[in-house]
Amino acid sequence: MADEDEPVDEEAMMAEWEAMAAEDEEGGDGSGDDNEEMAAEWEAMADSDTDADDDDDSPSSGRVLDQDEIDSLLGFDGDADAGETTGIHALINSALVSYERLPMLDIIFDRMVRMMSTSLRNFTSDNIEVSLDNITSVRFGDYLNSIPLPAMLGVFRAEEWDNYGLMTIDSSLIYSIVDVLLGGRRGTAAMRIEGRPYTTIEQTLVERMISVVLKDMCGAFEPLSPVNFTFDRLETNPRFATIARPPNAAVLIKLRVDMEDRGGRLEVLFPYATLEPVRELLLQRFMGEKFGRDTIWETHLATELWRADVDLSAIMDEVSMSLGEVMNFEVGQTILFNKTPNDEVVLKCGEVPMVSGAIGRSGQHVAVMVRHTADRLTLDDEHMTGMS
Picture 1 (tube, helix red, strand yellow):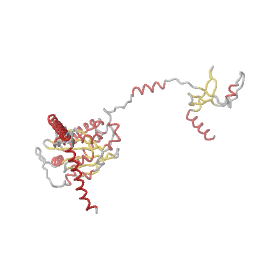
Picture 2 (picture 1 turned 90 degrees about the horizontal axis):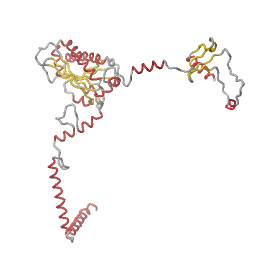
Picture 3 (picture 1 turned 90 degrees about the vertical axis):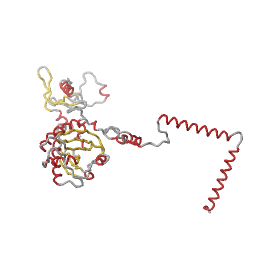
Picture 4 (picture 1 turned 135 degrees about the vertical axis):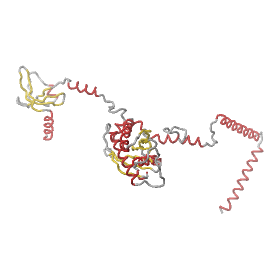
């Protein structure tokens, strides 16, 4: 029944709305003219706002953004510098810990570059130049997705830090190293063969190069904190080289290896969890920096403390008395102690017992011969407390 009545209700409602509209149009006192004038005024205001927006070149609420404005808003503007991010992308990455808070990394990897230049020359018997491109902070998942394939990823372990790092060698450097080590002709670019996996010989030669680089990296970290980097495994699929969670922050070091007209890129990645054991050392601005400590003042203070004067009190015995007895003391009254002339007295500095010994006479002075030190006094006090 409800379905049959529904069209009738709609027709009645339409008729009612038409009647109301007719009444409004027939209303007296020029209300229709007022409505028309108000509508014309609103239209004129809308046109003026549109013209002002067009003159100022500012996007109005109804205008659609073009692709350049969308890229700028999202932070994918191609005109921006490579090291800078803007827009939403910058807001998302604002939680990343900047490597600039670890200034010692620049010194370490600058030292590593100099060591690699020498060791790789000895390894390949060729003229090799190693340069440091940049050091950046990235998220581990974003880095794995940005690795250009094919590539080799070497996973290494920091023994003392009990964590892992990642070393990526791109295809250009792989073919260049293989070509140089197997006696390729100098002056010609390494031939790159696509569509095939890396052979066992190529992987073995790259492992040897990674071992050389890891040895140099150990030497670079040695002045700061001795650490042993050991090769763990070699992967060609980034999915199998996961050593941290995708959102985790990491430090990425990009190196460039040039061999005359050949060469490629080598990248080292350290998750921040790996560098955590030496984070305090990496915060230094120069080697051996002391955070807020002044060794000269510490030495001076220690010297003056040894020269300080202190008061010693020789305590023969102590008795407990009521306040009434103390207030009734009289001249000539005798107070008895539980000590004999042969018992030891305790020398205290303030309330701290220092030594004990027998009291006696040395010339015109009363003297104490030390028999026990503070350690023995502490043990005796603990023993007496346990007995009580």
